[in-house]
Structures are given as structure tokens and as C-alpha cells.
Amino acid sequence: MRRTFDDTLSWSETGTRLLLDTAAGWGEEQYLAPSGLPGWTRKHLVAHVAANADALSNLVRWAATGERTPMYSSSQQRNADIEAGSRKPAAELAAWLSSSAGRLAAGIAGLNDDQWNAEVVTAQGRTVPATEIPWLRSREVCVHAVDLASGIAFTDLPAGFLTALADDIVAKRGGAAGPAIVLAATDTGDRWELPGEGEAATVEGPLADVAAYLAGRPHALTTRDGFLAPTLPVWL
Image (cartoon, rainbow, N blue to C red; front, side):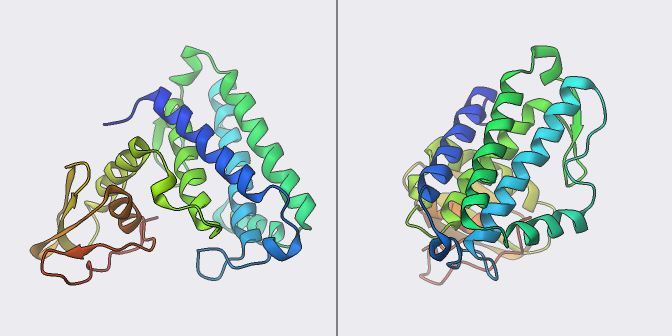
């Protein structure tokens, strides 16, 4: 694992600043513009990120008190909250984004060593130590800062985060159906292998494009033969 707990705390703070600084001062017109995610406006995306902060605060509370507090009551409620959030006025949505991030940061700052080792359960049903919470938040805020479609790109994210993201996605994609692929980051020398069907294709390009490709975002990767990189199944 090429990430430390301190790394994830730093990346979470970096991604949160990117989101808050980018959306600062947006009015209805900017919020209603399409995001980088199909079918979602920026309002949908910001509502999702704000709801995620509240959900992760539930896990922080779980770790702090020992009382089982799931991220979401159900996937249906999660989707309903995002849809409701997408209809909030711009000022109210911006306030939710900021206040939820602040509550999560305060909760994280209040955990002691024993509480960080407490086990919690993610929205995907994985049992993990609370030390994973900053990493879960890092993925959300960093990737979705790009998804705001406001000029932030994967190249603007910390290199260490991109490497850790690629590690994380490859580990999760390893058991999924799809083509066999060898990924090579030409600027760092890192390599990843995705097991799958057929003879492995070698796909190469800068680390930022490798991470974007694995996450299902726009990229410029090609195979060594000059063909477009194979389409991957959905990440999450």
C-alpha cells in the first residue's frame, strides 16, 4: 500500500479546498451547468459530496462512540437526498457543502488513537478501521473536484494521490470481468496489471491519464499499437 494515514488526511484537505474554492461565489447559472458525470448537474454533484461528508461523519461518530451508525439508512435514501439537494437554491447548497465539510473535519480532529482503530462499515459493506475514513473522503473530493467540469484536471491532483488511487482501483477491478490490460505510467515508471479476458494489451501514458482511465474519466491513453485503450467496466 503506497499511502499513509497522514497522506490521506492531507489529500482530503487538498480536495476539499479545491471543491470549496472552485464553487465559491457560484450562482444558480453556474450550479445548474452540467457536471462531468452523465445526467448530473453541478448541483447533483455538490449535493452528493455534501451528503458524503455527512455520511462519513456518521462513521466518525461510530468510531468515537462505538454506536453503530451506518453511512446511509439505505441506497434509496442516499439517492433521494442527492435529488433533493440538487433542487436547493445555490446559496443553501453552498452552505451545506461548507458546513458538512467542516463537521467532518472537526470530527476527524477529535478522534484519538484507540478510536482510529475502531472498525466501521462502508457504504459498500466493507468492514474497515476508521483510519480508512480520510482515504474514502480523499477519493470523493479529489475525483469530484475534476467532475465539476470547471477547469480542474487530474494533472492538478497530488501525484501521490493519483498513484494510490490507481492502486486502489486496480485492486478492486482485479476480480471484475473485463479485458486483460497492463498499464504503464510513462512519467513515473509505475505499472499495474488488470487480469482479464484475452491477451493483455499494454496501455501507456502519463500517471494522470492512467488514474483518469481507471476511474472511468476522460483520458488520452492508447495502446502501444496506437489504438484507443479498451473500455473498462464501471468502477464503483
